[in-house]
Image 1 (tube, chains in turn purple, red):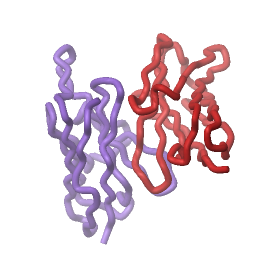
Image 2 (image 1 turned 90 degrees about the vertical axis):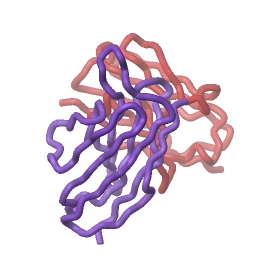
Image 3 (image 1 turned 180 degrees about the horizontal axis):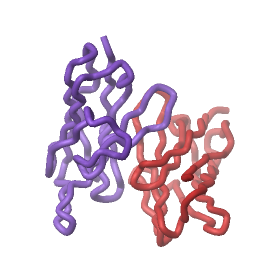
Image 4 (image 1 turned 120 degrees about the vertical axis):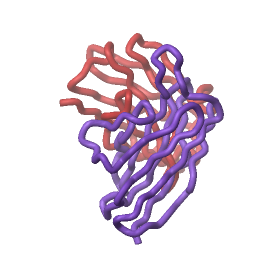
Length: 113
Length: 113
């Protein structure tokens, strides 16, 4: 199974700051046929279902604010949230869908100071 | 519009079998895959398994010996069956349409005598 290592497990920032969440996979998520990385980022607010933010490592889902940026390739990926807002309070998860079984990172809890 | 809704018993006794149904609308099961994801209270997301558009299935490595996912395309329903339930199977169970843009609201399953 592909292991997804996510860091940090939690962080607290003030509104307006920039946040970086890291996700490392135990093997490359780069598919040679489509030349894409099969990595997604989800946001889960308290009491809600997860929401897809980013897929193919860097493609923003429709309606997701452009302050959410996904980057990286191969085994190392980053979710950057620029100018964090109070509404961004949530848990964030990476997920690989390069191979089955699909696997999630352990999550990052974002708190707003 | 696309919708998914989980249903099933809220309480299951240890060693018994869990049966959940995901009823979908707004899309065809023969053109889309449906995944099950679970989340123990206060913990992270765990991919449980999937049934692909062609009807094949894949399962979480740790659960596959106890797990079965099937579907009834005529009723737009996907089924999850997991046997030999233990307290650690207590979780919110979500169904989601790949690639994760649409999720059900989840159903809490408590394993307790």
